Image 1 (cartoon, rainbow, N blue to C red):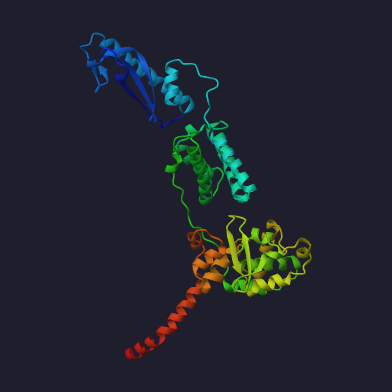
Image 2: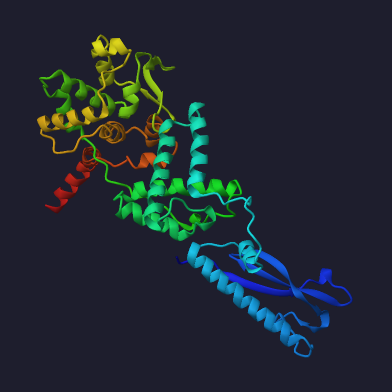
Length: 421
């Protein structure tokens, strides 16, 4: 296995232990900047040591013996370094020193923590936070998934079950990225989310003094804004006004439209109970929740359309039995029925539960002049840059704005045309 470890040497006299102008000769070795040192059987007069060349001056009667000893020590240590790093991919300066000196390894010596042990420690602590209500369960689940993917990668790439934290190099994370993209065929944005989780685990290990630094900090995660599918107002109207002859499709359509006009994700609407609707300070009815995905608060004033949908299902058997705001199907069924609805409506778009959230952010709010800061607050985003992903300007909004401009410029244009003719 190739390694990026670097080995260097320093030969010096330990002047603090000198006696009668005679000082013991020491060898100091460095592996990746970490040092270990030991004394040699030789002592040298202070006047006979050349500190620039780290050699005994030739005029000293034992110069040849001592300098040959230093050359051989350097050669032997270098050989051990190559053997160990080729076999195991890693060795510390202290282990290299002890190996050269033939010091037996202590059975009770502390072992290095491994990357999977670090994941397990982190995930256990996060689980405790989930139980305390400080972290949402989905965040914990993502770290579990990341840990499992790292484990699979290690088994495939290194033919072993785990890797010690000090063995981690930048090459590990670059190869992990390649594995996610080519073997697991994960999209780049998703792959880099897993890598961000991995980097956080390594930073935690640094904070716990399990490793001195995080070699993954030099790996930069990128993010590409994907093209997000939305519905325009005409498509929304078609879906809302379509006569559906089965109750199951009508319920799914109504829940989807509800999401389009509130911006709530499927997972949040699925959890809503009747008490979730409350009167705001403005006297209007609002819907508020801590998002299932992030745990951040999302509050939205209810527009007339979602209010009509809520009223429609107040006496619904499912809603009364389980105290639910709306009759929401399982996610799999929900998306399956949406496909049926979009086919019946003749709309050539792949409809999913999350398109409703995109549609709320663009067609319903931004395209109608709602400031992006307000939209960001309603969507429960902690950073407005997240909202900007949704902020594509729909064609209808561009058309409406240009029509206003055209109306303003028409008198000027008419005068100019009169002069030209």
